[in-house]
Length: 486
Image 1 (cartoon, rainbow, N blue to C red):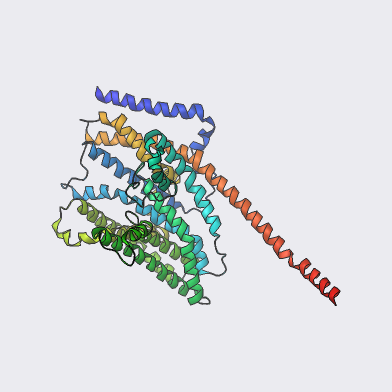
Image 2: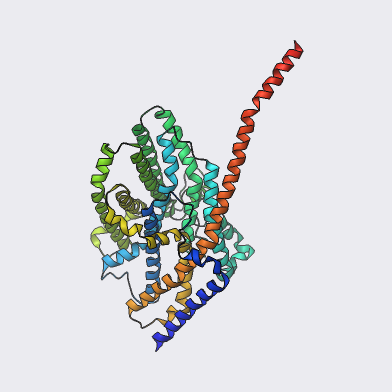
């Protein structure tokens, strides 16, 4: 009887959602069936859309499992089944996969220019403009809706400073805003700060390339950039160690007063790091991907990558399993033989997971693994990857709504059935809601940014044409003035 009541409540909530959609937004129904149609992202790599979808879905799996654990429906982290618990608990590292993908995709234009002087250097202002209109509209809408509906305390003057950190994408840097309002928001702060740094990092790389390998072969340029990315990884690891040291020694400082040092750590590390090692792994794969397009098909590089890809996939999966178990044991110290290396988990874990994900992405891109790529290129999976930004932001608030309004009646249910109800809510409510967010907010925002970018680009080109044509009259008037003086 109770089961039927809960199903009735769930069906009623879903009906309300769709009635609202059909009555208020009838014009978007054809586009809702295929939001990837007519997208401006014509140069997307199909398999990576699927990888992005997997990253988002495993984060959802992690949060659903946490809710089931908190409401005592089941205990997915029980030490009685450490392998299953490790896989579920590692779902949080889907954000690491997002960071690797961002490093790969955003570095591609710079990788092309770094490896060849024939490619124009990407425009920084164009990059910033696109990133702003890609992220800010949907994020601000989500942020202010959640503040108005769930966290009005941030509208009080006492919390304006914290709200300012959310507005400026520094919400991951301090304990007063880290994972507040909406848990997934902290990763957007990390992403945004990487956006701000990437053109500057690439500018430093091209300066070094021009100094060291200006007229050298593409291969030498490649190695110079690889060394730069290795330094980026080393810096990411160093900041982890530095933050951990000063966190465990609160009275110590270095060169500057401790409050100043804390301010520096706020910007270079934040709560859990800026994850530069993750982005650098993605950038490295992007560099190799671009390099593979510039060398002949019969080159040794292409032959080796094609031959090694299946082994790299297997190595990536194995490393993921090892890292997942290490992460699980860090939370549940049940395997004594791993205790001697637990102190290294804090600063090595992100590098381990990003390497594992990187190996898998490398194998998908470079190998002749058609059967392996097919699930990632399946249209429904790519569709989820397309709306993954909205899905990532909205899934947790909507899961929390489900938990406190419907799932609190699931006590006593079979754990598998209760778990299925969460996923039923996810696929019938959360994913359609995220598709609406993509269609109504993300897509118009990107289109507006693109129109503005093109308009500014035309004005800049017109200014260049005027500037290039202006010296002739000036030169003529100078000759006339000189003649008059003579």
